[in-house]
Image (cartoon, rainbow, N blue to C red; front, top):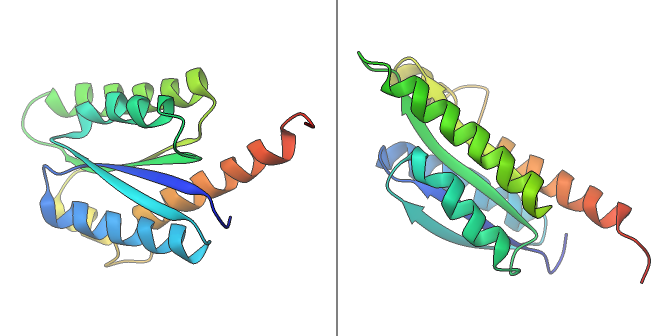
Length: 145
């Protein structure tokens, strides 16, 4: 997608994981010929609003929302995961701008690392690929000018 512009909004609560996810997503977007801007937020709960700001700016063909939530001893995990997932979905549906949920929702750091490049999966790359495909589909189905 040459000349396409993509936003990455990333929760920095787990900085090392955030860097890995951003690196993977950026690589995928740039290999596809797109340009990338990265916007930092504190945690996963803030991702939907950041995605909305990016989508409504009119500057981007898609938004990859990245971060990690690791289960702790309270129900906080459940609220943050559900709010982030449903909020990001809503932004995409409300704006028509593809928004991918690239948030690791895991039980422990080992699981997070396995999904951030240390295993066979890379959630940052997967989120970028989802945005690329949905942006292409949006273009294919756009009404003729």
